[in-house]
Image (cartoon, rainbow, N blue to C red; front, side, top):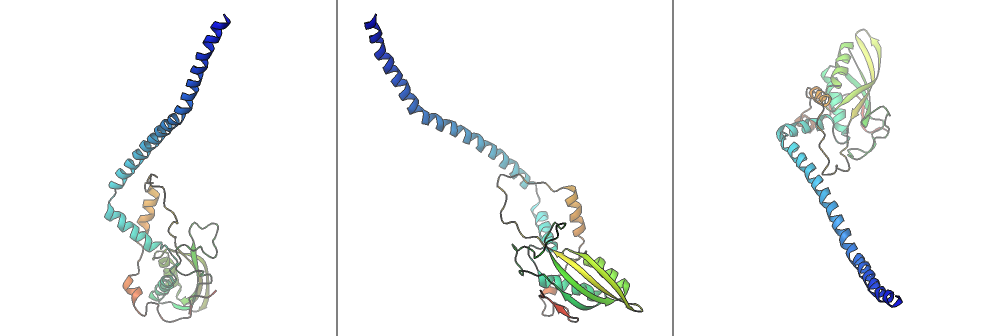
Length: 238
């Protein structure tokens, strides 16, 4: 009986060694096969996402999209454009027959820097902005028209402060703070497989509003006397 047990022990040991050797040899291959299957599944999901994204892009009108992007960039520039902002404010004032006695930007910061951050940002403000201090004089109706027009003229601006003093019969002096907004381009772009976010109804309504903004032509800005004369202007006061 002992001899029989000894005779079976050797084959069992050999069989165990063969099995263990097979496991160690096959394990890397099994791991590679499983990893390959995961990669294939991930690629299939990515392909499905990209196919859907391509279909969405193909459904867009390129001319219409280009026109909308161009308009939005005129209304909301990608960098601080100090000369244009000063020119537009003064032009709207003079078009209303108002006399500009002071015009400055106390916190200009880095000029024309697309990636720069504003010197100060109001926590309630969604967009970075340039602050402009303006003092002008004229009739009350002309001042009111100026306030309305400045918020519907490119670039995007908002009257954030106003004090009006009567200087004489039919003559008022207005001290105004205006914020001119801009939005720097993102430093990184989304992942290529990220889905395109559709334009919401609210965003369409906003675009309809800015579509009626008054635009200053490049020809006007390019003229040697682009910045209207008259009044005291300090472009870079700190």
